[in-house]
Length: 164
Image 1 (cartoon, rainbow, N blue to C red):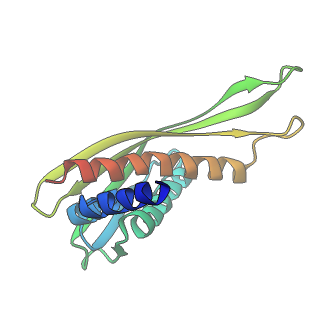
Image 2: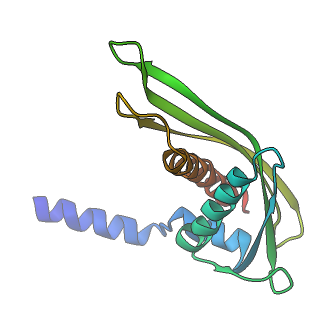
């Protein structure tokens, strides 16, 4: 009976035309992509972190190529709207030891049909800090990158959903 169930699941998923979400996102975005970042002058490091996270997502989630602006068929503009880093829990001595990094990102791109698409997404990442240490720049950068990737994952889903 177990083999029958396994074969049924394999044939059902193979026969129903299932494709991962990256397949549809890639159809909407295309192969050759350029990422443009609008730099927040008050905090330029975070803009670089968000752009690097989007570049990583393009190669790993869209399975597309990063190219120069003149060779790109799609230009995605990313902008950091808001970045927050705040304590979400304290230890018994009253010191903050759990933090949440949150980021609001704005995405703009023109799809292959020439339609301008805009999305705003929120991402967050929770992390812990040792009782006697403070948040280092490295921990902050990692937390902001992970929060950006969370928002970018939502963007990938929105691109696939809006592609028709």
